Length: 292
Image (cartoon, rainbow, N blue to C red; front, side):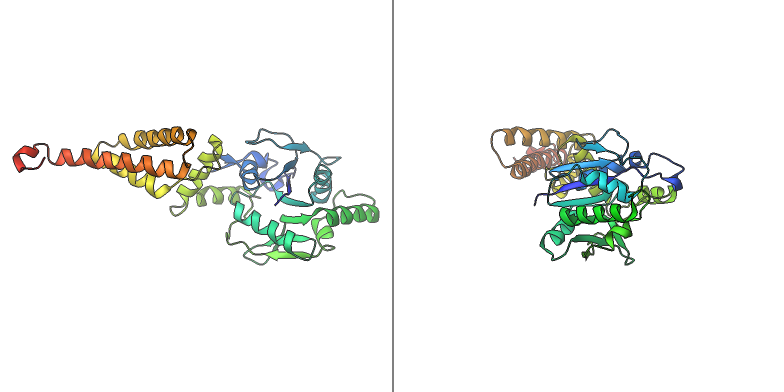
């Protein structure tokens, strides 16, 4: 499904004391980079706001004058896109995931209306977590500009009220969680470290940082391997062994092997070695017990 993405990153962040909100970190990544990761397969990504370093290339633009509000910012962004479908996101969504993005795009592309927006767990519509058909979005923005003489300061509801939008409820209840205050930011940083999801968030962040987002990670297999190496050899063997498995799998993939199978095979070999190593430690004198 071909689409462009527009990320609005130019808000005043008044409740954050004017802080540069898109560059604040959650889970070791900026809020902006976390949003960009959720729409990494966009044909074109336009960020409306002040330029800053990003983990992947984007196009930058600003509404004129800056600080004109979400409709003016959206107008500036959509002028830089060409796809028939555009994903519109705010830059402060630490838990937005690709499945939610895909659900919005599918609903917008397959539905009878002008797009689809997320409806959060409290029943509130989220027009900055949405996918819109480009033509009606262009049309309604132009009509608003004609009616009001300017887009500056217009609320998003002035735009969305004129569009026929499908409501999508995400399977991820935190997909629309945004960081408007310092308390929100603290809550996001705490949630990302919760026991049940910390490994998932960490692996996603690490893959993004290393530029290997498309690599599948068999967490259970690698954790089992690390346990076997730590218990059967020595604790420092755990990280070293998983590194060597990754290295071996990369070499196998370079020769044409399936990457998932390469990791599985390298993990199996290393785990078997660790178990043999442990067995020797438990029975250092096999001749005395009759075993070979």
